[in-house]
Length: 533
Image 1 (cartoon, rainbow, N blue to C red):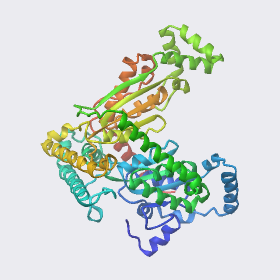
Image 2: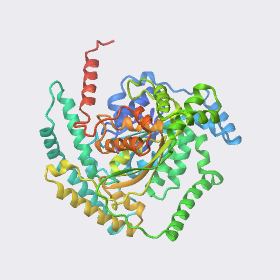
Image 3: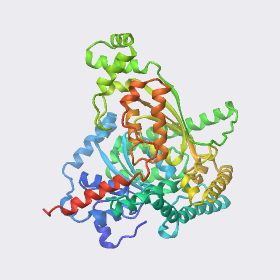
Image 4: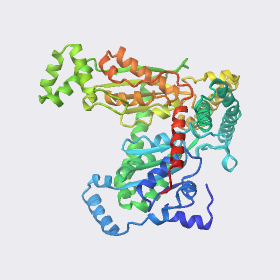
């Protein structure tokens, strides 16, 4: 935790719900400042309160005014409607920014599971993990671990961070030799792109216990659902966060989180969530024979379910929307069309898209695809952020093998990389025996693969595939999304839909962040040259 002097504490107390805890609420700040602060947060090593003091404090004090008029009356109104009448939609009217610092990567996925909230997480791409604040590496030690299990976990996590740090500069040197600075590119943009690629490659060494900072914005209703999810979770870290977050939210939206602590409401729901999962797990263990997961040679993507007549349904949805006919008549008409005629309708509806942000209407939501994906945990972390689709994942374990980046082999570190993976696998088995497979996840490095499913309609598939194959995308999930696109066209046979998904990148992005970093530098230069108001 940062230490603040008396003057800093006085300033922070006006804008944060506390000055000495890792969970806090932003208060009495303009909404635009909150958004900018969280955006800066994702790419800074600083804690949010330190970032505010260093970069946002000047100019804020005079503009931030407390909106106190009518607060009591509004609270009374909300309480009567929310508690007496049970109108949950009222809870959607109160929005809160919450910061969570020092959360493990396991916990961040629990936090970010909800669809109806906004999250911004500290990036492993922009943040090297080769420093030791307060003399220790940045990872969470599970409270469930004691004695020899705890000692073994700490030693193994330290070993992972030490190898990450050892390889960081040799890898950057190799990348500079492979990707010389292009003419016309600034030194700052080039250095940042080299560092980002090194971070991308080396993040596979980091255990899932690696900590991160998360910015959250959501309605009070969203927070109520998040609190119930946290408080019912089997991991102590999640339950502790739930209690800490509840305490902070009670300071700013007490009415909306009141039900969480009521035994007849939140208590019953928490018991239900906890019991249903435990009972289902026990039943499956008794009914399903034990199955061994053999290590895989590589990541894979399978299209496990789709609608054969998906393009017919999309054409029918277009007819329903634009031709003024009933749903049944639209479907009957679409079935009579030839494949070429359906493709022509879909192409016309898609229109002349000039960039990936130009997306067609909701007719593309009429058909869907279910993909089973086995990929490294780092790639999963990025794809998991697409919350509008259905995404479900299995527990992280070392049984599906791990990725070995070619650059690691090129710098002669293949043996050290593989040695760490084998060591962490052995420690995982030790921790699983001592605690549970859920707790044992913490020691698994991000290079290990995890199995998950992504089910999405064609409109969301367009968004995911095009966004995650841009030039700055990490190559691991770029390849996954390119394969999704191929499967839609070839396996599902939906060529017209695949043709509409036109902004699909290439397999090798080189220095993925170079052009983006150069654009940032250009904007900074333009801003610096702008005359003062």
